[in-house]
Length: 59
Image: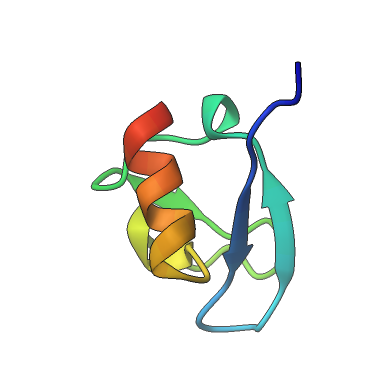
């Protein structure tokens, strides 16, 4: 069975990475970029609407 992943992009430093929804907080929770430590709502780090939908569905 393949696990879903969410593609992330920091709006401040431009860091790109992937993570599984189980490793991430809910969409409205504050998240900190592992690159620059910028703090924003988790939803603002998702790269696309599809990534946001995946996070909302599996989280």
